[in-house]
Image (cartoon, rainbow, N blue to C red; front, side):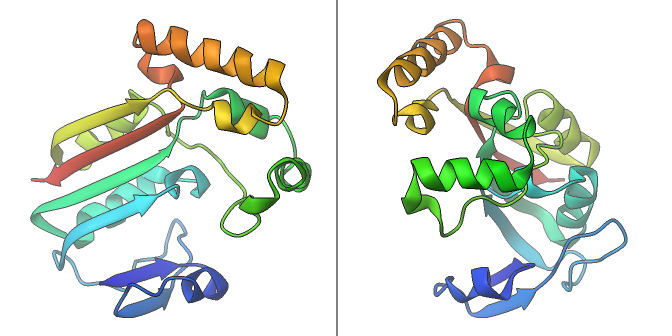
Length: 182
């Protein structure tokens, strides 16, 4: 198992892999893996931090073997907390997040772009890069971000409940998908 991350510090926390590679995604950069060489790619709370997910999908499609799986979970661009996060500079968002939820100091607070991190944009992107058997799961629970103040938590909970009842996919809190490369 191989882990790629632009941060040596973040890689140091990952003890469940055989190899760690420092790799910063960029439009012209290629992941240091051969074409059609990987069986499965997973990411958890990563795609929202990438400024150009077209590039990400191109690279994942390139390195995956035919029949390989891509599984990812990430916050939706239109979740209440994500919309608030997009309206402020990252230094302020970090300050607020860490003061409200100090337990998140490790592994949180990175700049988020939310590029195409909503349904149906992600579905379109996956199809564009030759993924099939695309299955999405929608999570409508984002109230934990607002648990520090009961009225905010209740408003977020009511919002999540309405979005869940009416199954408003683009306004879910989090998305998870699995997809297979053709």
